[in-house]
Length: 572
Ligand code: NOJ
Image (cartoon, rainbow, N blue to C red):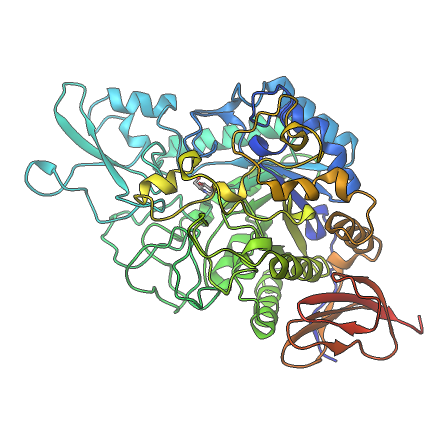
């Protein structure tokens, strides 16, 4: 048996951590306005402790007009009133620490909100001013400067440029926004921008956070010439040969050439070598603090060898593994992405991470119930996922993921087997993707629906008043936390048992050795544990092993289609 990945020798907390993503507006609402908040999240932290995770990543809670769910920050040092106050944030961190949970907060450095004082000042100032130099303002092309400075497209649809009206009322310059027009991109070649964000890091480190999730970590530095680009964007985009076997385009994917698979950066706005200099300086900022502070990159970068550059020893600690998230539900594809990820991260001494769902993609319970593909949201008139197949595969995928060496990221609600809301009323959609694509892409609201805590309470216990910023589908009721707690075989108890065993057996630090049980089976050993995920016809568990945990509800030695079994040697 060949060991593909050796056991870890170093054990900083994040190397094998299971991190739970809280999307605050949809987690728990204490004040009853229908939007989740920090006091609500604090009151539910015991759920995370009981689940058995190591850390919590909080999506943005900063002052923001909320045009992109808070990823449009107007003040990096204060809390939006809809979520609470700075003391509420301090209380969240303190309670998490009391419960033994680390806290990562979200840093959004690629762009600010257009309500940020810097951008307000830039609009009031003249072209060529220091105020404009913090952003990417350029003169337009063509007669009268009427055309955008280049042909870049926003990841959310439409042009990546918006023209301003100058203070004297004349049509003016254009500013770059890789996302919504309310999210102007900062110019990271400006030292003032770098100084400011190092100060923001320190502000939160001083408030005792354990680290940061870095938004759009591969996008801050642009090619200095801002040249035209006809390839496609990689952010939140599908791998050409992962998932999209029905020909559908992925969320955020733009039209154009399929993009190079030759190891070159994908476009002059992504993965420019200059970003690494920023991360080396941030590494030094974090190193000056006691404890093991850590950063995880949201970097949609291919191939894995280029992604690994973000987690070299003097840069970030982790990067999300979107190649894993985007893998087809196919044993060979899963084996390849697991091997490739471990090899790439091992080559720089970094930990590999695993993730199946987050607030930007269709929940894996629903995604895996589709015939393939990676749709940019699902609406009532789209093909609907098969809920039974989806949940079966999601449980199998999660149980496989939680046995892999490295660190795993969970998205709130996946421990309940929550599906995407696939029939949300289009009038209620809030994701800017829906409007910016002229209603051709449903966007991400369906994975952001508030959590069900109590089946019989208003808004399933999300808020005391029954208010909920997005309506919850009736399918959420039977999946509420109180309906699954203590119920053998429930998805919640499956996650709890998996996390307990993972911790006891230190699976996150273990070696991985592949076991050949056939083409349609992904099977490996992590130290003594045999992990079998069967994507083909039912097979028998190898002789000499006893089942210790399984994603299906069988009680025999058969590993059925779309199921995962954890087993230990009977002779132990
Ligand atoms: C990635 C975040 O996860 C997503 O929600 C956001 O819309 C974009 N970055 C822009 O900040």
